[in-house]
Amino acid sequence: MDLLRLATAGSVDDGKSTLIGRLLYDSKSIFEDQLEAIEATSASRGDEHTNLALLTDGLRAEREQGITIDVAHRYFATPNRKFIIADTPGHIQYTRNMVTGASTADLAIILVDARKGILEQSRRHSYIANLLRIPHVVVAINKMDLVGWDQQVFTDIKREYTELASRLDFRDLTFIPLSALHGDNVVDRSANMDWYKGSTLLHHLEEVYIASDRNLVDVRFPVQYVIRPQSTEHHDYRGYAGTVAGGMLRAGDEVIALPSGFGTRITRIDTADGPVDAAVAPMAVTVLLEDDLDVSRGDMLCRPNNRPAVTQDLEAMVCWMSETTPLLPGAKLAIKHTTRWARAMVKDLRYRLDINTSHRDESATSLALNEIGRVRLRTTQPLMADDYQRNRNTGSFILVDEATNVTVAAGMIVGTE
Image 1 (tube, rainbow, N blue to C red):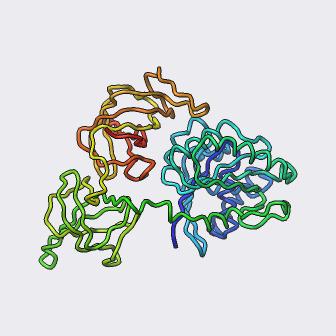
Image 2 (cartoon, helix red, strand yellow):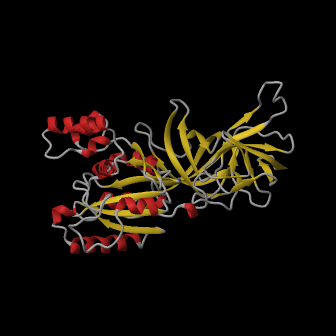
Image 3 (cartoon, one colour):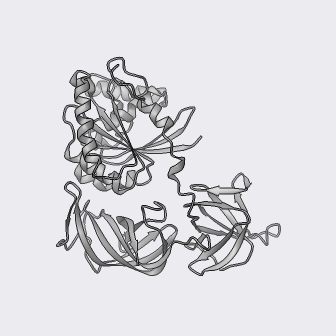
C-alpha cells in the first residue's frame, strides 16, 4: 500500500479537528478506550455530542479554547491506502505551524464554513498551500447541515473559490460538501445531499493518484551516513546510506558524487529487507559504489548529465518563525539543506509578501514572526540544490539560530546563482 500525507487547513472553527475525528471514527481507526475517554470528556464539558475534535486537540489550552494550536499528527489505514494526517492551526498567529505541518503533504484539505464562505484565513492557507506546491487540494465545504443542505450555498462558495484558485497554480482541485459533525459525505454518502454526485472524502483520499507527483527524472541521493562495519566478515563493506530524494537508482547506473564531481557506478543497493534492483523516492537505502571515493555526509549522488546546481548563493522564499528576533539583512545563521549543514548570511531582503493581497512590499527591512518574504543567502559551503518547484526535497531548507539551536525559518529555493 502506498502512503498519502495530508494536511487540514482553513479558518478558525471551520471544523478541521472534528473532520479528522470523524474520519478516524467512521473508518473504525480509534480504540475503544480512546472513544470512552473522549465521550467522558465531552460529557464533563457539557457537550451535546461526542466531541470528536478531542482526538486531535491534545493540549490543555486547545481543549479549553476549542481551537488547534500545535500540529497534531494522526495515522490510520484502510484496505487501499495508509494515511498520515497533519491537523494544522487556523489562527493567524500560528501560520508557522501550518507551514511546517503542510510542508510534506501530498494533499491539503481546506475547510470552509458553509455559513461564512471564503474568509481571510481560507485565502491565506490557500496561498500557503500553493507556495508549498501541494499537488492536490480538496475544498471541503463543511457544516452543510447548518444551511439546510442547500445546493445553492455550495455552488456559490465553489464559484467564489474557483475564482480565487484561478490566480494560484493548483494542479488538482476538488470540491466536496459535507458535515463533519454528522458524518455526511465524510466516509459514508449523505442522504441529505442527493444532489451531490461526486465522491465522499475518504473515497477521494483513497483514489487520488499521487504516483506521478514524485520526480522520477532527476536522480538525487543525499548521503546521510557512511556505513563501515568493523568486523572481519564485512571488512571490505563500504555503503552510503540515505533517503532517495528524487529519480530512480539502479545497480549498474553511472553516477557522480557532488561537490567533488568524481564519477563511478552503483554496484548494489541494500535495504533493511535485503538487496533491491532499484530504489525510488522516498525509499531509505544503502548504496554501494564501484570505486572508493571520498564521499561523506552531506554529499550527493546524481547522474553525470543531470545535476543540481552546486552553489553558495541562493534566492528563496522564507517563512520566519522566531518569536524573539526578526530576520534582518546581514544576519548569520546555520542552514540545513538535505543532509548538509553550513552557515549562511542573509545578503538582503528582496520583499515582504502580504499573502492576503499578494502585494510585495519592497521597502520592508525585516521579517517578523509568521511573515513570509524573499531573501538572498550566501553560504559558507556549496549546496546541491534544485528549485523547490522542481523538487521539494532538494529545494527546501531550514535556518537555525546557532546561539539557541532554535529553528527560525523554513525556506523554499526559487533561484540559484
